[in-house]
Length: 239
Image (cartoon, rainbow, N blue to C red; front, side):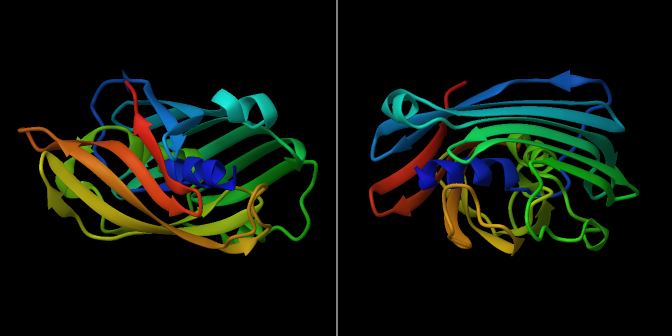
C-alpha cells in the first residue's frame, strides 16, 4: 500500500515548470486509476482551472477495489494562487487526509512566495521552518502545472522543491525521450526534510512519466509508473 501512496504523491508533485495558461477561465477534470501488478488499488481525480493571471486546482485520491475494503486512505486538497512567468505562485493550500494514522488537516497561507502561516492538526513533530521554504510549491500547485495539457517542449527537464507543511521534498525530472505517439521522462522524488510519509519511511524513489503528444505539439500525461517488490505499479489516465 505504500506504493499507492507514493504514486499518488508523484502524480501531484511532478512539475514541468511554466505550462501556459489561457486568457479565459478553463477547467477540466482528469480521472486516473492506480494499479499494482494489474490489480486496481485506488483512484484520483484532478480538476484545474485558470485564467490569464490566477489558478485553482482540486484533487481527490482514495483507495479502491480490494485494497479499499481493508485499508482507509483518502485525500482531498485545493490550492489557489497566481500565475507568474515561471509558473504557479501559491496563495492558499488546504487539505484533509484520512489514513491508518488518523485524520489530518493542513492549511498554508503564502505571502510573496513564502509560507507565512501554517496550521496542521494534529501538530507534527519537528516540521521544517516555513520561513526557510521560499520558492517552494504546495503539492496541488505542482500538480496543477503537470496534470493539465500543455506544450510538449515545456514538459520535463525540471527540478522543483515542494513544501506541504510537514516536509520539504524535491522532484527532479529528466529530459524527454521520444517514443511512438509521445515521449517519456524519468523522474526522482526525494524527501529532504521533515517527517516520513504515512505509509512509507522510504526517502527517495524513481518513476517514469509517459506523455501522449498531438500533431499540434500539445502533450498530456497518460501514465506514471514505478517498480516495486510486488511488480509494476502504475497510474493510468481513464478520462
